[in-house]
Length: 150
Image (cartoon, rainbow, N blue to C red; front, side):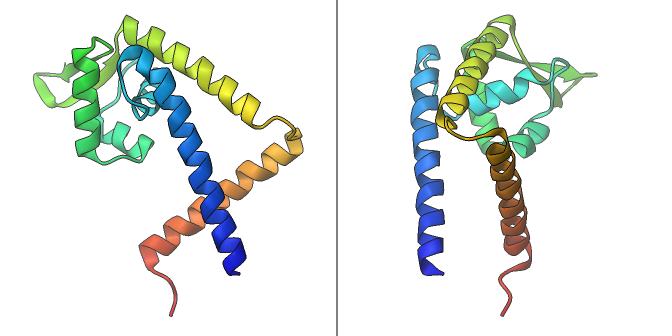
């Protein structure tokens, strides 16, 4: 059991570390950090914009991180916040044209990274892998919400 735990922990950590390294290298072109890649690619899916709480939920980040990252991206001209009615509190975050170009570039690079990193996996292997990850994630979420059984 410990061997499986150690292997799981190590492999997840290693994949995450390498993914962040690749993302950081790509985002450096925009003078941004690796985590901005997730925000860019998520915002890209919502032409009409989304709120900061929605972005927080979709990216698995806390609201303070979203606020910091969006502020940086606004200053770089990649994101704008549009008011809803006269209220900026629930404003919608949208990519600018420059932000869309950056997001398209990052999406293409991420797709290439995923394709190359899964070289040697058949479609059936890939489907099984993602199903297993989804199940493990769901089970881990339940364990965190409910606690480990006694």
